[in-house]
Every structure is written in C-alpha cells, then in structure tokens.
Length: 596
Ligand code: ADP
Ligand code: MG
Image: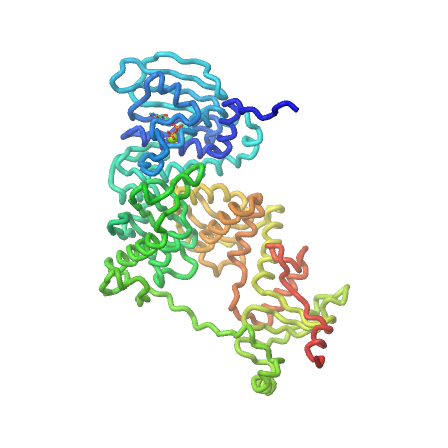
C-alpha cells in the first residue's frame, strides 16, 4: 500500500489554527490591538464597521515593520517575540505564538500599511486567503495600520455561526475594554460605524475605569495595593454598595493580560465576605504582576487562561489584599489588620446584611422511623403543624380532572416554604413551588412575546439605570423583546436608560434589580445553553421573578399557582427539563408500613 500521510499546505494549516484563535470578529480585534501594544504604541485606534463583519482596522504609532518583516509576519509561527522554547517562560509581551496574523490572513482580506520610524518609505501588503496579492513601497505614517475585511469570506460555516451585529459588536466592545483597561497610559480610540464610542487620553487607572465603565465608579473605588516577594497586586475594587446583581465588571489582569480565573474570583468574593448582599457580585479591576516563570500562559489558544505555580498562595494573597483594602477604607469599621492573622477573620460590619433566621431542617428526619418514635408521637399530637409549614385548605373547584389526576376539593399545604402538597386520587402530589412558578412565568412570557401583547404598568417616578457598556449593548439588543413583555424602557445617552414602566403584575419588584438580574441570567444562559434570544429572555425573566424558596404562601396564592400550573403546556416539567412535581403513590405509602 502506498503512503497516505502528507503535510497539510500552509493555507490549510492556517485555517485550522484560525478556527482556534479567531472565533469571531472580536478575536481579531483582540489580536490586532495586542500586537499594537507589543509594538510599543502610545496611540491605538480601532475602527469597526458592521460589527467587524466588513471591516476591522487597527492603527498604531508603534515600531512598524520592515518590508521583509511585514511579509514574514504573516507566516505561521512567525514571531519577533520569542526565539527559543525557554523564552516561553519569560513572556512579557501579549503575543508570542506567532499565529494570529497568519490565521487572520487565511480567512480574510488583509491590508497592511507599515513604516519603521527611521525609514523613508513604508510598505503596503495585501493578502487574501493566505495569498499575497500585492506588495509595494508607499508613503505612510510611521507605525502600522492593519485592516481586515470580509472576515470568514472562505469559511461559510463560521460566517453563518456569527450572532447578530449587536451581539458581535458587544464582544468587540468587551475586547476593547480589556485592552484599554490594561494600558491606561496608552491613548485609545474606538470608532464604530463612523461614530466615536471612546476617545481615551493617557491617564491613570482610576480615570480609565470611570471612562470605560461609567461615572458611578467615581466615588466608589477602593484602592488595592499589596506587595510580596512572589507578586504584586494593585488596582481597585468597587465598594460593596456598587455591587450589582449582574456579574458586572470583574477584571483580573495577570502581567496585563486579561484572564478568566474562577479560583481567583472566589478569592475576591471571599475577601468581600459578609459585605455583599446575598446574590450581588463585587466589581474589581485587579492587576497581578508576577514573575512570568511562575505562570504558564500557554495553556489556551487565545491565552485567556493561565496556570499559577503557587495557586493557593496567590489565592490567599488576593483575598487578604482585598479584605485589607476594604478594612483600611473603613468599610469594615475599625479593624486592625495583621495580614498573617486576618485570613479567616469573620467580619463584623455595619453594612452587613442580616439574614432572616432560617429554619433548620434535618433532611434525614423521617417521622416514620421507629428510632424516632418519640418525635413522631409529638408530631401526632400536633398533627399538621410541623416546623415551618403552613396548613392551608384549598380547593380546585375550577380544575375538573380528566385523568383522575387531581381530586376536587383537595387540600393544599405548604411544607418548609418549598413544596406544595396536595392529595390526589393516586396518592400525594408534591409540587416544587419555585420550579412551578418558573414554568408558569416562562410560558406566559413566551406567549406575550409571540403575541406582542405585554401590558405595561407605567411608573409614577421613572427610574434611571446606568450600566456598563457591555450590559448596555445587551439591554439595547433585548429592548424590542422586552417591550413585548411590557417593559417600557428608553435609551438615554451612552449607557443610561430610563425605566418608565414594567410588565404589569410586577410592580412590587425593584425594577433596577429585576433588570440586572435578568441580564445576568441571560448572559449565563446564552453562554451555557446557546438558546435563541427570546427563549433565553423568557427563561431569565422567569428565573428572576419566580417565587423563591422560603416564601410562605397563603391559601389563595397556592390555589392560584396550582391552577395556573395545570393550564401550562408542560405542567410537569421545569424549564430546565427536570420534573417539578412528583406523586407519592398509594403503593409507596403502603410499603412504608409493611413489616419487613
Ligand atoms: P505574535 O504576536 O504572537 O508574535 P502575530 O501573528 O500576532 O504573532 O504577529 C507576528 C509578528 O508580526 C509579531 O511578532 C511582530 O513582530 C509583527 N507585528 C504584528 N503586528 C505588528 C504591529 N502592529 N506593529 C509592529 N509589528 C507587528
Ligand atoms: Mg500577536
């Protein structure tokens, strides 16, 4: 048999690499901006049209490239940043894999204009799908301009996979913010569809944060500063009162590279412990400077993750640094900190949210267990008032049962603030109140969006809502559908909105919290489940608004809930596809009393 293995042509190899490095227009934005930073630019301009689908251009005043380098830059594994494997452990630049430009050029039409500052003439280079179409000497400003047009022109699968312009443009904005945050001393501008979205002069981090994420950070940042021989932590955390229901602004930059790191995120949350209202997220902008030898940035194609050699030590240092800063600015009143001692110090605080006392439940408690006979006897003398339950008779007169499912006049009872229990013909039905209400709301919201008939309740005092740029674009994207749900929200300036009305029946909700909650749920759903936006919105609303566990329900409320549940299309299934009710059959009950 003849040999069948052969090396892939470079253009194919580049396209494969592009699949990893360039997933969407925002990925190209990130790579081009990082290259400009690596080139030592003090001024970087990003120009985008059509959410990057038709044009992404980055112009810098950095070192520029010679004609030969300009050509080489588009070869795979061509980089000026490392030359041997050992260099991988000393990386100070943003790039080093030498893949980005080759990848981009394999799936787009690229035009480069570049000039070294001490050369008279610059270079023009045009490449389409890895093929060089033109190389010429031209007059050009010193530095580099790279424009990327028709991204994914030869990869229809990728192109079709792209989201709406609004969604893609939000991703671009996110990338812009990450790079601009990391380098406050560099000027950045961002022009989208001929409109200037940001024009940021060089400055200090604090100003950069406000410019990027909103004026609400003006008064609300607490400086974090901590230095040990292992690492240096600097930056800011948002005061607990700007914490939001939506995940908001959470930035870790390790050697100025934005990373995702759930473990470190946890460290920050831990540093905030006791200061944040339940379910709120802290904002933070933390820079970690660490010897590049002690981290591995080469574990992810877009370098969005790093491994720390001493992850646990880093965790503690971050946690302590955050706690100390919050303490120093007397957000935690008068505590003397000894960093060594403070690691597990429980925080007393004036701002601390006092949780209502919760009822302790022993999940293993079984009144029918012989070993617990005494308890059982006590329960028997007060038959229907176990701790935390409310006994509420109710009826289902309206609910005629076709299949013998529900008995007429059945009693309803709430147990432990979680379950609604009702006798049915075949036994005892247990309904999870939270999941049931999610199902009801979900179906109602889907219906209002498809029929376009949401009823809005106008507010007497419209409220304003300031969001981060990325949440603001998201909300803008969702506004048309939210309108059908009964929200009356108008866009008011860059990242501000006015809430004039909310869906009727939800007047008691705090509209700001509601919207932040919905955005947060929506982001989580979209990243995990890839649903269409209407479904995600209905799910997010349902999750945010469903009756929580622990809420006591009156007789009427329970009856109403059950009635509404059984007119749903899928009354037995939660919106996550799991059962929301269960029946303990007569057989099962009988089995409990059989002698073994
Ligand atoms: P990497 O950044 O990993 O080295 P890239 O493919 O992004 O790989 O870039 C390849 C090379 O092209 C870089 O190492 C650099 O020498 C050069 N280069 C890219 N962009 C610029 C720029 N804006 N200014 C100067 N040189 C650049
Ligand atoms: Mg690069």
